[in-house]
Image (cartoon, rainbow, N blue to C red; front, side, top):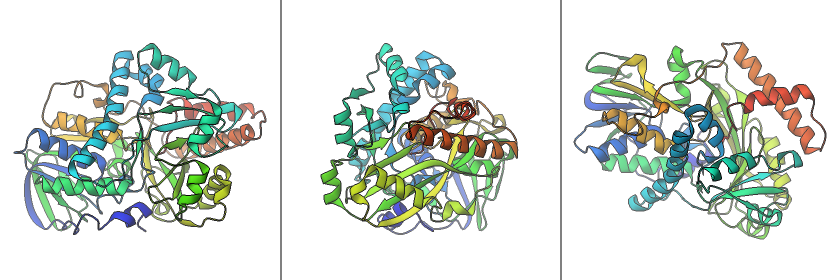
Length: 462
């Protein structure tokens, strides 16, 4: 099943790219045609137009997480405290500024290249939908302001309800450093621009194996690529491809529903622009409108994969469509009679820290990787391209010196403990948040288990 976003945009950029046939040669081979692979190829080519770059995509560009996410282009400012704890204050400030700049860079690139990705730079609202959530971001805002970062502004309750379109949002803060996109139109637009730059793209060409020699050889079912350097950019699929990464990430679903067009109802509710709205749960509800007058709502953390396996359910209608629809009606009672057009889900690669990590596979300078965006990669994937292109070009800059290039910074427990523990914690969080919604005191054990998920920062799934 193709996710709704991809069905909307699949043929907007012309004919499909061919599958790889026969033996090919390139300076750089990139495995993975999503945001990370495409931004890496484009930014590398921009800096050195003479390089011959080839991308292998196992399905179609945008068929993975890049084409089926919620389209919320967010920054790392909400995770500043975790960044500071992991990397120190100076690097944390730099990364927040870089993540905010990435939003602008993506918008500028779309305008310059004529990519109709429905980019709307209207900011984001982090809201509270019960009393327990009020003030969640206050410590982060205080720390950011102490470092001269004015990332958020606290809004009066009436303004939060008006801007978000829903009286269910009791309080909140606003950041202008955020945007929304139609995610598949963005990835297909990047694909078009990459091909125009001379970057060769082969779709429906999954990598079967590769030899790590100099030069290395990547094998597909009908051909091969001999290249000087290789980039592995398959994100959530990395855990199933390489045993050494199985404990580096947890593969978690993000589930979405979208309504039929109802622009008049959305306008009457007050949701009149492209602002994204995220509540303050551990596994957030997030929603936004679309330019054609639909409402999309999603929630992360519903399904945990076992080990590095990719469950079949990730390519089906969301099994949580009913509960998501109820949540949508909770935010927008006026939409109760509006039909749901589609539901879908997909995998996100949740790392222990909540941040992506990059490195050299087994220490080999010519084999690079980057993944672990933890459900909020639409904006940070641009930064992933900056990191990997800098590493490919052997540059000495802030990106190649960043601690993000040191590989995984933590590991989940082995199976079956990770799977069992993940579901135990998820269920505890659900009970805790139901109690908070009812203004009841959660069980102490649920509060304690919930802190385990929050240890690395909010698990945004947008």
